[in-house]
Image (cartoon, rainbow, N blue to C red; front, side, top):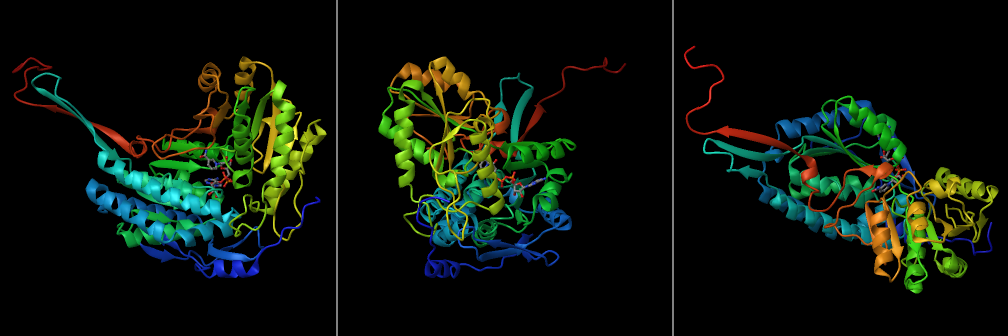
Length: 509
Ligand code: NAD
């Protein structure tokens, strides 16, 4: 328990929020609502403790039904052969509908996940922008032609939709992450099966209704809800699925890849991270401290990109950590429906327990917990921003994803040591470097093996820039100009023109 004031939630605000969207939702199969066998999953707001949504608990037979619907949508439906102009029109309409329903969508994500409402609003706005970007890429998609192969040969490389795509998403950014996948798969002409996390299904199911309203043909997008082993696993092994687009933990991603290997599915994997923020003495300290605070506690640290590993040059380490501790105490942890809240609730009691165990183990291994390190007094699930210092590179907390409002600090002396330390985990999702010296910034930028390196900034993103991880942070990239191409196959048309001039067997022999 800490000296902080107990967290209070505003019941009036909660009731008003819950009135903004239906509590019960259905799965969507070939344009129809489906309830599966009748069992449901109830989701309680981790901040408020009340049931906020109920979705069907899908089973393997429901997964089979959605996959069959998508297969039919792809093999016989109009979407794969729709013109790029019409595909783009649908995607743009979806973006407008997301804008229209922004508040309701933000409330669904906030109540199911515990994230701060101001942040959720930003995520929905960002998601609409991604749908618009995908619409622009839909019209850009093209193949290649080779007219330089000789008079009698023409080469045409077609880009065709890959087929049926299984899209599996986690709970930490429910609407944003499905929007990093689905619009690009649809822009390519694929048919999709989508499975949101069992804890945060509402906004994805709402998206399904927006797709129908925007005119997406039945069968092009089908949504199943339920637990991973029941419905996620069949989506990774079914022979009718051509590609798996997965975001989640490295452990489940590995299992999904293995399941897809039997039928050699293409995979796109966005997995975990243990992202270093490297700070040198010549940095703009105020900016670096602000980014360190944001990077550690944004989305309560439940973020693949969290700047969860501070690598501080030894000369500045103590001053940096003292100031970070002061700032950490100023971070407003509380009711996620309060627009001033920065850190909302932790996703589940199990997960909160896991975060606490990580901190306890670090303390036992000799690390020093500089702030709090415990849950906060409340009926909901809240944890105080926590700094763990004097961490050695071999400690579990320096290598494993904690996925909570916990930042660890390690010190270093030289630039080479900084790069080696940054590369010392199995992950490689992102990193940041803080220095005014161009050589230092570029050396870290080029030396660290991660999919995104931020230089004097943190967690900036835009759909134009690719996102993904090295090593055990993932396979492939999302977003960026190739985002639609990822959901295509290349087909070579090798055309012979004019009379045949070269014969394998002598003619007339
Ligand atoms: P998770 O791996 O537990 O679950 C992700 C999804 O997979 C859920 O929908 C879950 O139901 C499903 N699933 C579970 N078992 C499955 C199985 N056997 N087969 C198929 N699907 C299965 O992850 P989580 O706890 O929901 O999310 C947190 C993790 O996601 C963290 O590790 C985080 O780093 C990662 N993440 C990565 C990114 C990124 O872009 N790199 C973004 C967000 C989250």
